[in-house]
Image (cartoon, rainbow, N blue to C red; front, side, top):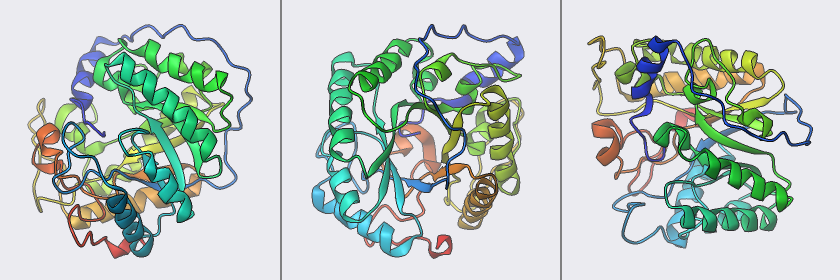
Length: 334
């Protein structure tokens, strides 16, 4: 959701069509995978594009800002693990800063339409993975590439995975996408073919956006969101029984208080923004994940003010910490 696409706008069409796109041709790798981890991590998505900083243009986050944000996160929240959204343009400093604070990192190698930039990103990701083997604990080749572009850049995802394998990085590898993409845009859930390439499944689930875009699962209030997260993960677990999974993004906007979206298909208004509902969604989901020993990444650490350009009025209000000084965080997550 770093650059939220028209997320589940395609969901209804594919559901009602009762068919799925063909799975990509992928080559099985020989690395063995254990389904369960000894202790599943609970993390938070970290992006330093706060205040007036925009990832698409202008100055990049400074080292000082990244240090400030991570210090605030460590001091005021329970999380000792973060998920990051890039390995270039100054973001690579996050790994140095995280290591100093003994934070673990799930690192996303950002992939998009520019093939040359993707190649640079993959190379930087390999370099970071080898430089920080005790800090970067998992890797992802892209985030929601298929949600943004369909199957057009499947080859870029596979290229990234293959290059990481060839470089013999030690961290487990995935590609992160929405639950709908991991179900190959089909119901019942079907395999994509990427399971032959990856070590674990990184799955993003957002009832808030289902409430706006979907015709099925079109009304999920905050007190039902945790159950929805688990139900979708259960569907994927049945489809990929031999793969470890992580709920790589989930959350709820904390403002505008009392605000809601209208479902584009049903006209329902089921998602209500607000701090209480954000707490309900996050805390109840983390509790349910812990019972199953599944990892989860709260979206997100700090609210990003640039996001309304892509996500409307609610885009700037997903953080458990403010996106402007003094960057105060919600204490209830401790």
